Image (cartoon, rainbow, N blue to C red; front, side, top):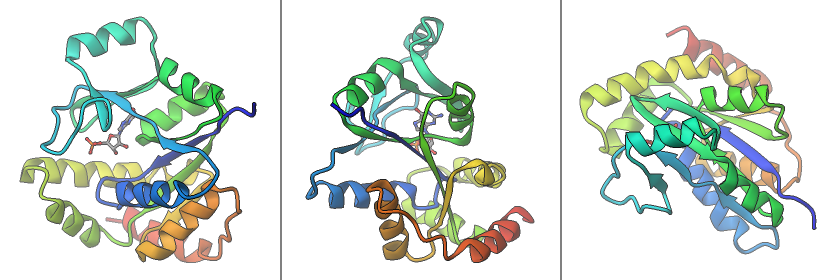
Length: 208
Ligand code: 5GP
């Protein structure tokens, strides 16, 4: 059986990454290919709609650190004050049975995977502007104003890592961005027609 492949998707929070990933998963469920979103472990407290084992494996700090000591993580990082990590056994069990896995991880986690030479295809989602990013974070209404400010600050730092990814997708128009991500993951190739436009937007975002 052909092993599954890893797709790494990163973006600053508010760039619309989760909605894009869920759209791709919805569309792929009616195709033959098997794609799943990897479930990470985290010390973050569950949000009201979060389901343990489905959205994340919610762990105590102690349990997380115990797993870190045992080198159970493919990568792990501190994101917005909480720990997040991808479990090696979980990923291997999926890839071995031919499931393609999407890892929704931050730029620090991606760096660790690159350093370990683990084969992957990486995608960075670019938001159209900082003001759009802020308004999406506010609309989401999931975080306190302090957390939103922290996430915005981190967003600028994360955008600096965008050029290390194989592909950059601009999420200005949701349908176009989800088509692009879907085609990429379904190995239909990408037309990087937007490269110049994306570089200009990225430069503008980084000058903030
Ligand atoms: P949230 O708390 O909003 O679910 O996720 C916050 C951020 O943590 C997201 O940008 C997401 O990409 C990142 N994240 C989630 N799981 C992992 C993980 O296993 N490893 C790393 N490095 N980042 C993660």
